[in-house]
Image 1 (cartoon, rainbow, N blue to C red):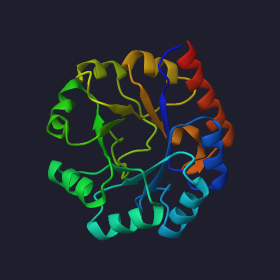
Image 2 (spheres, rainbow, N blue to C red):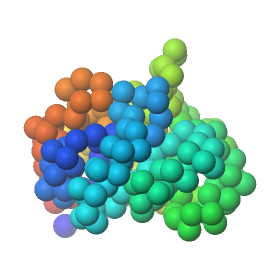
Image 3 (tube, rainbow, N blue to C red):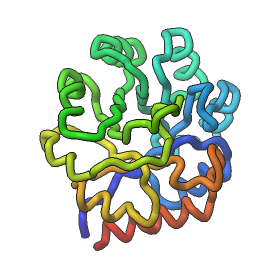
Amino acid sequence: MKQKLDIKICGLSTNESIDAVIAGGATHMGLIFFEKSPRHVNMQQAKELSEHVNNRIQKVAVSVNADDDYMGSIVEFMKPDVLQLHGKESVERVQELKQRFDLPVMKAFAISEVSDFDQVKPYIGIADKFLFDAKPPKGSELPGGNGVAFDWEIMDALPENVPYMLSGGLDASNICEAVKRSGSKAVDISSGVESSAGVKDIKLIEEFMTACHNCEAA
């Protein structure tokens, strides 16, 4: 059997979707703290969803250029295992947040060509992990969750020892090809398991998880 994939389902907002993600064997779940996103959750929702998780899965808090007060609230209410930064956070900001909250940080970048990795290099050894997503379509206010893919083969240009999650336009029909062509050991999905923006579909979650496990066994 191939190496087991790390699988993150992001943008959850109901207990039912959390249960489906855990039952399917995902390793991580994500909550979105970004008001422009249809997947945004407030602090009370985050607290209730986090309590429902009850340490059954790694919890990832996704934010975009959050200030200290907002990040402090996220950590207090959600008690995440990982902070995912999806904005323009600097290397210094990543270091600062790691030290302030004593949590690992995953830094997200939008990429479409090999030269886009130049912006990543200063963060190598600082961020604990990276998430690589496709660049948003023109006019989109969302840095992620747009359902757009990029050329997975450009991942060959990234040094082998850099840990990352592959994201952007993934679904049950293309996940095996994405993993094969990118060589990724970890994947992230949000809009690919939704019936409409921000609404997770239990059947699509189940189909995606089955497809991921089929990739592992291929």
